[in-house]
Length: 261
Image (cartoon, rainbow, N blue to C red):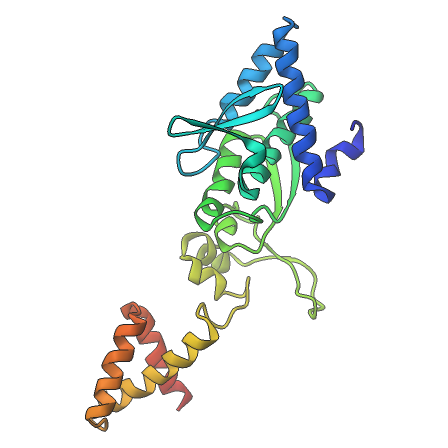
């Protein structure tokens, strides 16, 4: 696949990105075996890039041959095609990006704009926190325009680069968030982000947990004011231990209960 369509094909087909990228890298491997000028250097530079902390938990892209890309872990070797969606998707993303740059005669330090739709798809939370900084560090001249539902991916945004898209029932246009909201999302916790206007959640807890926490706040008020009997105190202690929330969360719950009264 060549031309302008090749540059956006992966937006519509994840498999297209992986298949095209791996086929391109296999071709560089074969060209290197044939002694073609620059092929070995290009192949090695791509493998070095892929092996530089892209994959999590000690996994590392090590080699490419006629069967495809290979990943190593604790001395064992696996074909990339047998790995989970997250490993294949992220590797495909990076290989496709390098391929597009190489086809244009450019290196990883080139400038440009790259669109990525839902980069957090298939990624564990810990990986969502790392993927943005990794891409920015390894492609310093690229401006990444990324859509995401992950607060952790949002934390990699540059100042002025966090944009809120309207929901299905909202009529307002997309807008750059305020500096105050940017600071909260980027430098706060995941809970800070999801409870902000950017994501619009009322609570980070499940509906069942919210119900139990509201009941705990009611019991806590009775205990604090001396109105709870022995059974109430015992229920409060059991529920408190069961939920085992942090002190700031408990303060928020009790304060909210007082406000509602």
